[in-house]
Image 1 (cartoon, rainbow, N blue to C red):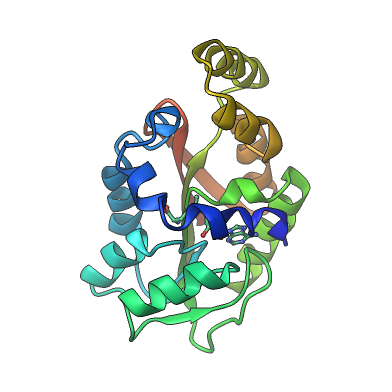
Image 2 (image 1 turned 90 degrees about the vertical axis):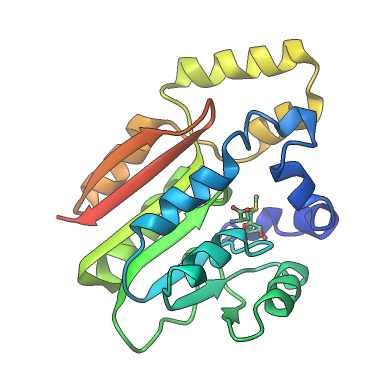
Length: 212
Ligand SMILES: C[S@@+](CC[C@H](N)C(=O)[O-])C[C@H]1O[C@@H](n2cnc3c(N)ncnc32)[C@H](O)[C@@H]1O
């Protein structure tokens, strides 16, 4: 589900790690504190962990360093090949946020950074309902992604980015499904999670949801 943006990463793969390090001016604020954001997600992970949208493997590295057993899910073939080369022992599978091979052992944590916005809000809702079913009793979802405090805040950010002349970022913010905090909160609560949010930069929030 939500695979309509997968091909964008065929082009972005070679410069992706430069973008996250702040070399791409348009995306500098989106990736501000990137390393700390990923570390916060890794710090919260426990038990068998499934990671969605692994990309170049930067969050995976932090999880593996912590001694976490990770199953990586990534729909882009070039990203899978890149990350498999980086971590030859890693189990990495073709899949997406809702369609992925479920490990036989209980999954305690689902993690993802900078990727959940590839799903529409309706698709996010379906995904979260599915996570409630497949996670272990003490299971949790720990995602970090761009979202906005409100619809007004999202429109204000579009205006700001437009005034800065960041046309690529503006196109991205309008094209993909960057949601709002109230919508994200409702869809986790309705699926039976307790959820907490922490803002990590002007764009990215940490979403930490536990089975209620
Ligand atoms: C912006 S990158 C983030 C990569 C990495 N998680 C990070 O934080 O640097 C988004 C990743 O999500 C993947 N992706 C795109 N659509 C997806 C989907 N529907 N389900 C899971 N991953 C998806 C892309 O192929 C890409 O590798």
